[in-house]
Every structure is written in C-alpha cells, then in structure tokens.
Length: 210
Image 1: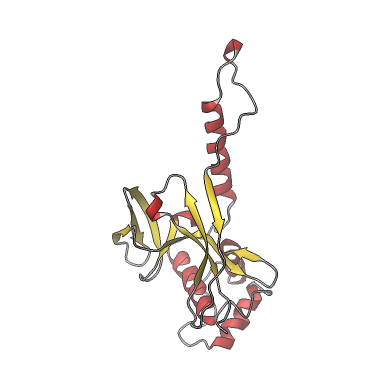
Image 2 (image 1 turned 60 degrees about the vertical axis):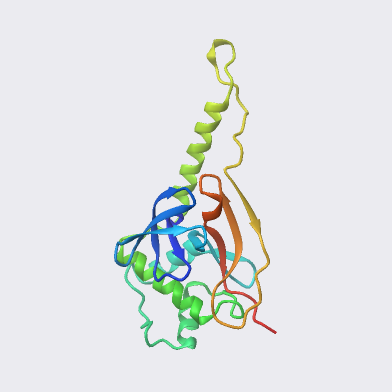
C-alpha cells in the first residue's frame, strides 16, 4: 500500500497514485481528495521507498509507522505536534525507534513522519507492512516466468527460467546540509513508470554541514 502513497516536493501532505500517463502521474491528495498531475519536473517520492537512518543502518518507514501505530493503539500520536519542542520530538521518536541517528534525523524530519502517520490514519490506511506488496511481486514474477517459458513435448513449460528484474536501484551518497530538510539518498527506477516521473528513494536525515 505504501508504494502507492506519494510525497510530492513543494506540496503539502501525501498523495495517492491514481494513474500513470506519458511523462506525468495523476495523484489524489489525502487531505482534500483533489486530483492533480505530477509532471516530470516534480520530485515524487513513494513512501515505500523511504528509510530512516539509524546508528547502524537504515529502517524502512513502514516499520517505523507500524511501531507508532502499536504505541498509539491505532490512534493519533499522543504528542501535540503544534507545540512539541525538538527535545520532545526526539524523546517520542526514541520510544518507537531507539537507535535512530540523532545527528542525521532532525526534529523537522520526525515531525514530518508523525504528520504523515496521522494523515494515513485519518484515511484509514493502517497496514504499513511490505508483506502484501512482496506477495504481489512474487505472483507477478511467477506469471512472467510461465508466460516466457517455451513449450516442450507434451506442452509442459520449461522450468528454471527467471524473468528479468522488475526494477533497478542505485544508491547515492547523501549530501551535506545545514537546514532541517530531508535529503534524498536513493533513487529507484521502476520498470512500469515513465523515466522522468519515477518515484525517488529517500533516506530521512543527512549529515550535518561542517
């Protein structure tokens, strides 16, 4: 589900992918349900491709959102985001992701993740796991394998043929920054998505400037 939920740079909230066209995506706001086009020049990131820095590695945002949901029993966050101070946000986030990288994950990043969580809950989107997505990908690969396999005697499909990889991911080094904005650290090129509108893969947080 998170693969179809998008963040569009310069636009508030989150958007649901409605359809794909030539050099554009049609997305629907989770805030007011209005549909708008996202063009090649727009920076579009799928929530399914966002991770958060920890002291050792990265954790998918789906795991973090799941931890928040469990902490809050499926309700909105218990912290007042309009009044929360940076230290309040860090303390809260440490309860759901104890080893998050304090140097690269800024309070503004934490607040954005918590706002995203509340917006998803408001839209009754509560399953943040990858299980369903992985099963879908597996089924698609099996279908592609069966379709690509040549026939043998007795019309039996030849076994052991694997379909081509559905996507290719490249990983880039995160740029240094001085402000609290998120920095894209990965990019994913989806096979079925127009080249100029491929959702980017991002890691929340970046190394501090200096």
